[in-house]
Length: 130
Figure 1 (cartoon, one colour):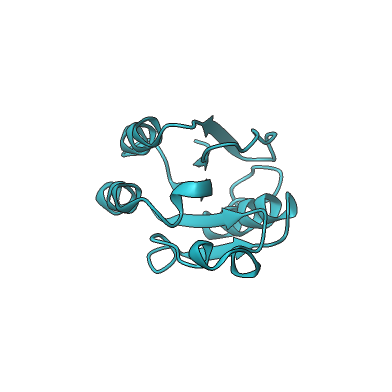
Figure 2 (cartoon, helix red, strand yellow):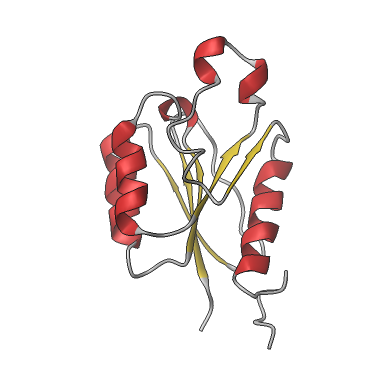
């Protein structure tokens, strides 16, 4: 059975293409919809990759939902949030994430997927290594 990754994009972020593993992609501009999707992942998903966009520094509810489902996650930001406005330097997710990738543009998603694939024991072609 293929391992499943849920990729969540926060407000104003485009969807990304499938790369090797079974990849479910979700994007919403609504905090509640993102939280609902995280809850739906419980028991159906092995890892979450999330770019929380503007919710990074504002949403305790998003943090609580990720902690509540007990699915490991990687936080991704296309831009370097530490080189932006001071209020963007804080993340409610980073201290609970398995890893944080920022400032690599679209390559950050590729890096996150490659990292998660290795954690799940899958190769880049989606085969499980034995």
